[in-house]
Structures are given as C-alpha cells and as structure tokens.
Length: 455
Image 1 (cartoon, rainbow, N blue to C red):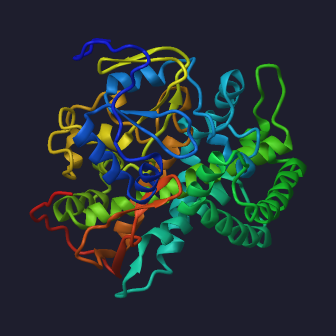
Image 2: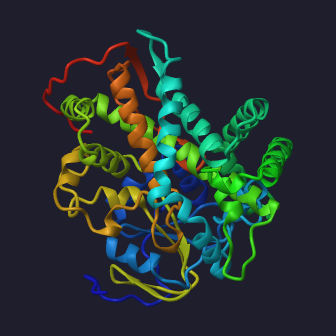
Image 3: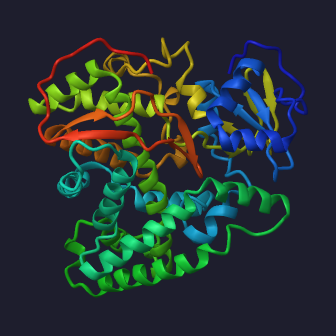
C-alpha cells in the first residue's frame, strides 16, 4: 500500500511512550481510552506500547487500509499468551483459541446458525425475555441498566443458544453462569494474567476451577438431554444445530467440544451485547432528538433502517472491546513502517472509529451518518474482521434491535444522572462505570425532538 512516510528498516518499530512497561500496563488497565488518546496525540496514528508479561512491543494502528491488510492476511495468528486467561475457562477446543485449518473448519460449521432465516427463530425468544425483564423494573426509582441488560443477554443465551428447558437446571445455570461471568469480567483477572505471564506461571486464578466444574456438570446434563431427545433435529436452539452439523469428513463435535463452544459463545456474547445495550441507552438518553426519532419510528412500526443506524453509531462511538490483535506471519507495511513477521499488531477499534478523516465530528453521536454513505468495511470494526470476525455479530445486532424496540414500546425511560457515563474496564470489555443509571415510567411519552448534544 502507499504510505506517506519513507520506509523504515524492519528492526525499527513505531515510537512508544517513555513510561516503563509497568506504568503503561497500569494506564492501559485503569483508563484504556485515555491511554490510547494520549499516545495518538504524542506519537501519531501508529505507535508501539509495552506491557508487562510481553517481551516485545505491541504495535497499535488505526488506518483502515492497514487493518484490512492485517485482517486479510491468512498467515497471521493469535498473539501469544491469549490462551493464558481463556483456555482454562473456555477449553482447548474453543473456536476463539484454535488456529489454522482447525479454526476455519469450526468457523464453517458454526456460522450457519447465526445467519439468514435461522435468525428469525430467535426474535420471539429475545422479545419474550426482554418483556419479562422490563416487567420487573422499578418505576420512578433510579437503577443501573447494565446489570438488567446482563440478565437479558444471559437468559437469551440459555434459551436460544443452550436450549435449556428444564426449570431446575435453568435456575442452577443462572446462578452458576452469573458467578462465572462476574469472576471472568473482573479487571483484576487481566492484571493477574499479565503478572502470571511475566512470572511464567499459569493463569487464571485457581478460584475459577470450582465454578467451572459446577457449570460443566450442568452443561453436560443439557448436552446429554439433547442427545437423548428424538426430536432434537427439529429444535431451533443453537446447541441442537451444532450437534447436527458435520465437518467435511462427516465427523461431528464431541460432547467435550460442544461444551467448549457453548462456554465460548457465553463468554463472547453475553457481556459484550449487554454492555453495548447499556452504552446505547446512555447515548440515546443524552441525545433527545435521536431518541425521539427512534421512538416515533418504533411506535409506527417502521422498517429497521434508523434503529440499525443507532446500533451502528453506538458501536462506533462506544466499542465494547478496545483491540483485536494478531501476530504477523509476514511483513506488513503501515504508515511508512515495515513491521517484520513475528510483530504483535493490534488495530485499535476506538482510534479507528474516531478518525476525523473518516467520521466528521468523530465524538458526536449522529446515527444519521450511517443513513448516508456507508463507511468502508475496515473503518467500522466493532466485531473485528477477516476470518476471525465475531461469529455472533448478526445475532448481537438483532438482539440489540429487539431489546431497544421492546423497551421503547413498553415504558418511558430517562437518565437518572446529569453526567454522561465514564468508561470502566471489565476484563477485556469497556463498560459504563456507573452502569447507565436510569429512571423508568410506565407509559412512553409522545415523541418531541429537541436540540441534540455531542457525545
């Protein structure tokens, strides 16, 4: 690709902050967006960072053409050490942790349930779950939206993905999965994994072992029940579809691999979608014109055009995952730098999404921008890209649209706090610090657009 700077020698990486790795690590964990913005201001669009536990720098980039080159390179792999915090929980056959042909074979097998007509089967489940949750919300009293959205996405996964119908098992899974999710979402877990990597020890903390074993027993019982069900091929849940799917050689997933993929879908899809919904409500409640337009279109039963734009703009401005990196399998040219094979490179989703040359007024919440010319593929990357793009991206966007519609149809909702939410880290996700505190009334108000604000 063409670059604006002269090519550099392969051993010269982009500049990095002057702070020692331990300071960079703490800044990254405590305030990742501020850290990234500070680096962009001081060092430019492409820079290197050093974290404890890593022997070499990681290059951060935001240029869409460089992101495209990275994500479409078939020989690039996962950054080393990714399995330290994930493998003990997700399992060795998790699609997130496999590489090469093993990964591609599972991606091909697992993709169909998340696309096309099969997605329609999940709408009623999502709507029913959302309506049930909304009915429990307090009226005229402030509460945080984020945990309520977590309850919705967890229930959707247990019913639409796991296909659990046994009431007792459903109740036990709610408790076990909630505890497992809370423990794996802790920012302390990421720090402990980095320290363990530095000390060449295994992670994550042993305290997760007991929780994982309890959840495994419940999932094993659910898989066995699916196996014994003579009508399992007629079921709509994703577990049933994965059980029926075959690899090119005619083989199918074993029970242990099904377990790994179910836990992977849980960890990858629960917290991220719940957080994206919480951010979307926070943005809408602080932009009354956009909220009024969306409510009007929902009440009229209009097409999904504007709600899709709202979801897209929310994911642009508040990406839930800050980076999605690779280790280069071959040389990559970016912004005048020649990055050699073996370099760890991470597209910064936030920095890409807030480039003024792509998104005018990049910090403004303007869903209308997605009604105009669609941005280039690799300038909007909330779900990553290439062969490792999130399998559940379409499912997540569908879930967001259905939940948003159900909330706006059912009640009036307003922000409980005047201050916009600040960003807090929950392990690998960026969540609203106070949980998006809201106040709900019974009936939605008449739509009345007012002046908009900036994010």
